[in-house]
Image (cartoon, rainbow, N blue to C red):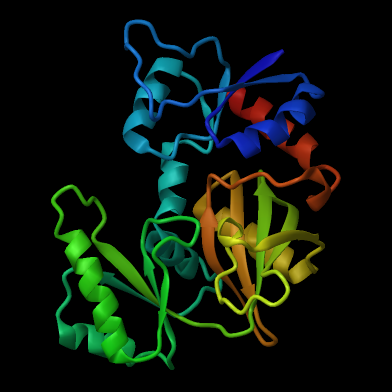
Length: 284
């Protein structure tokens, strides 16, 4: 039986364990974070393949060296998806539709920020380049509000240990439907729509902020858009966030470490495709 080292959070680990075991893949949880271990006696060994490269890259590099296995989504795949601006730039160059976006490298002077703001019809979305789960994202309606938010970002970026000193200004798409499509080895494998509970009037649809993910069947054009995004980034296992309005659809973000939802929210062959990808990776 193939031994799979899983580094994702408990919810994904628990959901994939039984379906993969049914396909002769034994799942073990490998977490190199928030713990200590001696390099001379590593706590994880005996695996054939990893899923997916750890999100905290310094500790992930240690785990990678100690495990010595190929990864479904290796370090380079994680990096191509991790920074929002880089992913969007790669997608745009490949002809994949993305929102209008300005990348800001901090510190930028006020004239530069004013010119960037004036490219948009307010409100404007401000996003840290490297955060997940909607953390730090704000919507601003005027220049003074933007400068206030960017002042706070500059204070954070002044801290010497801050590795990423960039953020995005992005167009706001009101009333857009928010989908997370999954792509496995280049093929669409299912999707959820993220909606706020009835009566909620917030604008963020992150599940970790209270939105509900409901399984949906996407039309062919949106399936193709998700597959094009994965191909452009060269990532085998990818969550693709789509914003869809009445007249356009764009790839808003991508995630090379996506949470696996309940199986009922994916296409019937989801776990067969995932198991095939894991085996193919192990044979590299």
